[in-house]
Amino acid sequence: MRMLLAGIMIVLATPAHAHQAPSGFTYEPFCCNGDGKSGDCQRISSKTVRPGDGGYIVTLLPGDHRLVTRKHVFSIPQAETRESPDDAYHLCLFPSENRVRCFFAPAMSF
Image (cartoon, rainbow, N blue to C red; front, side, top):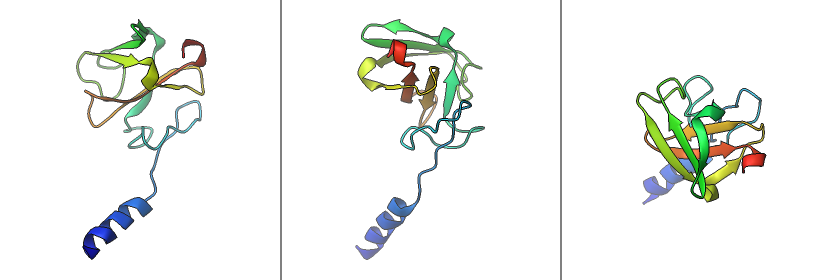
C-alpha cells in the first residue's frame, strides 16, 4: 500500500509539460504531450475545418498534422471546443492520430 501511495505521489509531483504554438501561447498540459517538434498539438489550416451540426468537421490528410498518416474526418462538438488565443485552429491528437484530445477554434467561429 505504501508503494502504491508513493507512486501516486511521484506522478502527481511530476510537472506537466506543454509546448507552445508558433504564435507563443502555451497549450494546456491536459491537451499537450511532447514538444513543438514531436508533440501532438499543432496549428492546422482553416481549409481543413468547416462548420458541422453543432460544432466542427475537421478533415485531415497526411501533411495536415505531423501525426496524421491517413485521411481522418473528425466531428467535434461545440461544447468540446476551446477558444484559440491566436485566432487560428489548433488540434491535439492523443493517444494516437485516431483521437482528438483538444481542438481550439478562433473566437469569431467559437
